[in-house]
Amino acid sequence: MTRHVAVIDIGKTNAKVALVDLAAASEVALRRMVNEPVRQGPYPHHDVERLWAFILGSLAEIDREQRIDAISTTTHGATAVLVDASGERALPVLDYEFDGPDALAGDYDTIRPAFSETGSPRLPAGLNLGAQLFWQQKRFPADFARTAAMLMYAQYWALRLTGVAASEVTSLGCHTDLWNPWKADFSSLVDRLQWRRLMAPVRPAKDRLGPILPALARQTGLDPQTPVFCGLHDSNASLLPHLLSDKPPFSVVSTGTWVVSMAVGGSKVTLDPARDTLVNVNALGDAVPSARFMGGREFSGLTEGQSEDWTEDDVAAVLARKTSLLPSTQQGSGPFPHHTASWLNADGMTAGQRFVAISFYLALMTATCLDLIGADGPTIVEGPFARNRLFIRMLAAMTARAVIASEAATGTSIGAALLASGQGTPRGRGERTEPSADPLWTSYVRSWRSAVDERA
Image 1 (tube, helix red, strand yellow):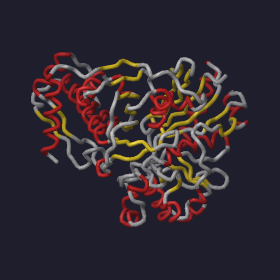
Image 2 (cartoon, rainbow, N blue to C red):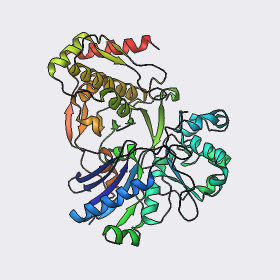
Image 3 (tube, rainbow, N blue to C red):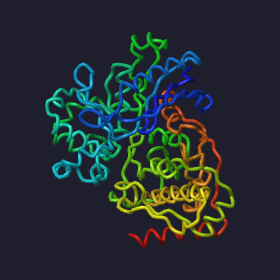
Image 4 (spheres, one colour):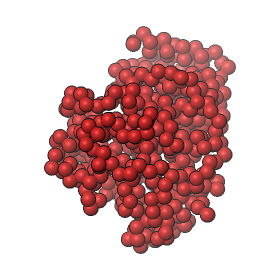
């Protein structure tokens, strides 16, 4: 029986290898490293070999403590790996925050498909994967010509583990411009640029690609028959447990570097691509209205070197004075991509009050994203923000719906591990928070919304 699944989880800020106990639906071991791009070379790129050494070392360590029954992969989106016929990288793996592709934005915009075809909004830098690949093809034609396969990031790690190349829809459908979720096929861009021949066969995230390669089994000490599953995009990994076990309507908020909100069974709305709404494709192949902003990055920047201690007196003071932060500290994405951040009623605020106001701001931005995608029913928060009680309480207040804070330390790992089980789990455990009946909370929400609207 498959019980202990090692999940390779490559996030934009941190990389993790977690061991998930499927019987308990919990993590029982975790290894973590900071994930920083390499600035040298032709452009900023991911330090793939450093990550690979971390992955293999972590698998070996964990397996010595508890036998690993299977391996699954999950990664951030907007990333592809160009490999040649021998499986080596044809070009470095571009960091999607690099703005080089913007130099060819005019040319790319003339050929990219419409939002109505792909559900992908036009995003800056390399956030549209098609723009990255287009730029690489134009700037490095000889290297690009060596490409035998374009692999999404999660499936690249699966290739290195098994030697089997595959494509998968959650990563293809993540604002890439490469996938048509309505036809469940590659977009017109792929055929226009004659890339279809480079796309590995599309396989379900739950497919067993094969056992770990013999050389890796010897190196790590893992059983040579340890199966490796195809893997999926990280936000969709957070969503999967709830797709398998929860009754719509509900929404899931996956938090990390990005805060990604996904609505299941909500109200029908017209998505606005100018506000970073998009169509994700879930692990079952279905389209999911989604919205996002760089909340984890904003939190890190706003709190760097600052105390995270606060009291209920700090909460009361922030609510009474309506001390608030207006969007956005990260421009170019999110529901207010062109707004510049500013503080209101912040004179004399203490460190504790500042942390409260920052947490409230992130919740208000998340609630705005949920409104834009027609979310309904309870909101389940996965990842680091689930541990921030201020965030949870304000999110409940602004949405006027219950919020469930997941207890999993890494929200993506449980979903990725479920690929090896083929079945759902009981509804995610976590504390349920109802909207506050105190009118100060609703008054704060109205004040923030009014201030944002005035700047529109």
